[in-house]
Image 1 (cartoon, helix red, strand yellow):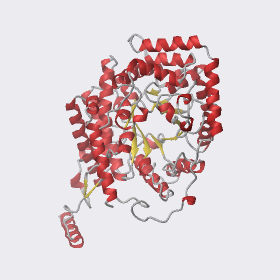
Image 2 (cartoon, helix red, strand yellow):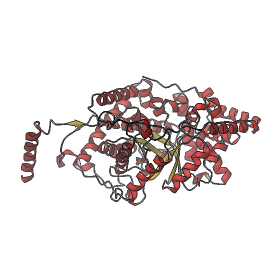
Image 3 (cartoon, rainbow, N blue to C red):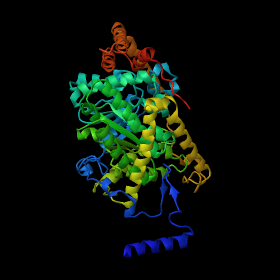
Length: 548
């Protein structure tokens, strides 16, 4: 009775000061969920909470979480040339990074070699890798059997094929190679990252399924599927939309893999997720907690998984580059820190923190060092990782987790009724939802209902000379890279290259052959990245996204 009286007194006091009742004085988060000024024990379902490491994993997928193993500090790096990537990557490892994540050049993502595009584009936003020779330079002195490697390597997976050829040459068994095909989710590319979208939808699916089958058999420590919410959220999806759409994509990939005859528990433990982390701190934490619960329920109740590893919602998080501003760029360090905290408090297995100057161009060395040290400070100084799910039991966070789960299920069920994620993106439903969310967000910024410090409030008169310098690739570096590629193509065994490409083409039609296995053979025979993708495009169709 005392507590009820206290609560009523608070409500009365609140209304007297604000002029409106607490039930009516709502704010709305990015996902459109109403946020009250105060939450109590009556607001959430206590039965949803379980201990960490136990179904449905709301509080974390492992019993020890960061007490047992910290998150991987996996910084994306992509610079000018393979030599420069190698130099920066080894510096980052010395600075505390304990995993590798390679960003390729835009020409690579479009499926071309550097000599197929305008030289001005080469190396502008990532590392140009065309041949096994380039890849060997990029990974020189990096122990690929001792460090987890994330390859941002879309359909075709030439990057992983090159890495495996290097492993063969170094005498390293494939079982020692650990990491993730970070950009295997072609549906996310079809929807929101068109530069990465190379083949037709059906052709992409066939290549992915062969990739899953091959890695399942030969690379037991490799994650062949990373379902990406990052592209969609960067394109304007709300956190709950990004969560729901990725889980719907995951359902599609599971259903299609099951059609190949693989038992659910033989491949599901190697499915992972990749999410954008916005500055909406509690909303992002709730997103990840709800995601763990939804994925566990789906795997157990819908797909009949019995292996707990299949039910674990493992995810990599990347702080949101879309929220970084060109204005007063040092403010971005604060934004990145809050975003990183959301990922850690949400239970991320690995994390990339952006550099503060990424709204201006490729990060300078100092900015890249601050980015990794942001993670180092959080991990080593803040105590943020000392307690598992420290916000568990918070009335607000638990209610928000319930709300996020409920809204995500609404989308998932709707997409199920459409026939699944492939149909939902073919008919433009997902793209339309994202477009409308992006429009709502921008209108809120324009009306100053959504404040962006330095952009629509707290502006200062900024002179360009105070901003970090915008770096450009030195023309001589591009010339050297192109000359090396020319020499490589000239000196290889052309007959062997032609035979390998013919065999790859055959694999797209003959189900007894595996496309990824033939891709590895093609790279070994001297084929370039661009030649492999060209052959796949000719056989499986060019990728044209559905733009709504």
